[in-house]
Length: 161
Image 1: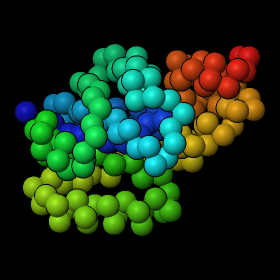
Image 2 (image 1 turned 120 degrees about the horizontal axis):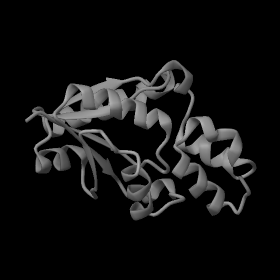
Image 3 (image 1 turned 120 degrees about the vertical axis):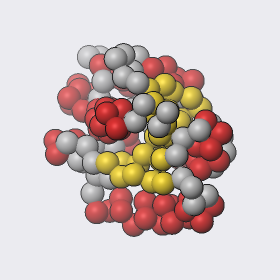
């Protein structure tokens, strides 16, 4: 079985994340979405809330979601994944992702990294932007996030839809 790990904070999951996930699911027998606590980013949603927001959007996909609190390469090895899936939106993502890929290769050279890009209309979406805009008007990000995430953001920021 060819298994891949798609690690991230996913605070919250966006349609860009889901687009990359769908592409990865076509290439692998199973994709595990690994949700990292990443307290350095001061997440808006708890790990459990993020997992629930993702899980609703997995119908029909050969994917499952789990949390992890160690290095992505170590978690990949634990679950039997041989590839890390990483999303690239713009050139600005590349430098950080390049560094991380090289370090992961040093830590475990049997785990490969595969970069996937979302469709063009989702290139600029990020969880951070979705949260920033949602503080003022969550309806304006409705086309970039799943419906359950839209409702969760509106509720979190006490906004009407």
